[in-house]
Image (cartoon, rainbow, N blue to C red):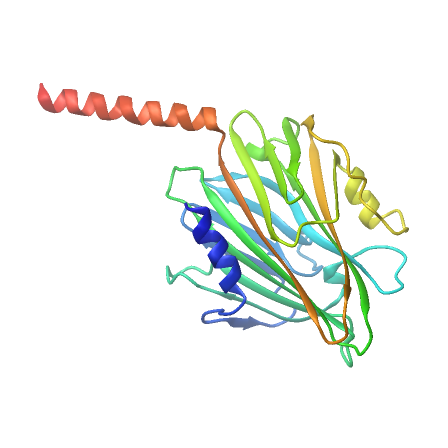
Length: 286
């Protein structure tokens, strides 16, 4: 898969959502599928027992994700809340590449049923790889709109807890630059690139240190800008964006995340494929 194509999809995805099917509030577990991949996203709390947010990213039958979701703090709030604490106004899935399976989810939240002061919209786009490749990609766009006539202070947090290979305690994570998060184990490699704008803060720590800061400590959080790299272990990481959004204006965050086999595993797969081809040719020539 080519990164240029994925970044182009991020830029254009919010401009064109094909065949969007609105789903009423209450049908909150959304499943996306494409190629060798599937993802589950729970858009609001329900009785189904699913953690709110993205709770499955399965590639070739292996689930690599424990949880990923977004928290916010706006205006005079003194602690963070998950975005599903807002009012779910609309959600819908679509098949943007015409494969017969929905691979895109759009979700819209507002802070009130009547006369809202801000809106949060999220697009998720799943692009699977060829069966057996171990490759998968998800694009995300988060648009925050100030619906009021005054500037809005807004802080957005992305929390990600990956368990690469379905194993929770053997990953290492790093932030190699201001807009990239990497995570890897002996078999798989993950990378997230923030196309625009770069986060203001970041944090890598053991589970559940960061998520406890976001959802249980009851105080305003600023991520620690530490520790880099971190692991191996059951690691999680987070990004933080800080905005002042002018009256009746919007900001948008665009991101791309990819899972691939770790480079050493790719070499083994390539060597295995070459050996199988050599043996097949040998049998044909016998």
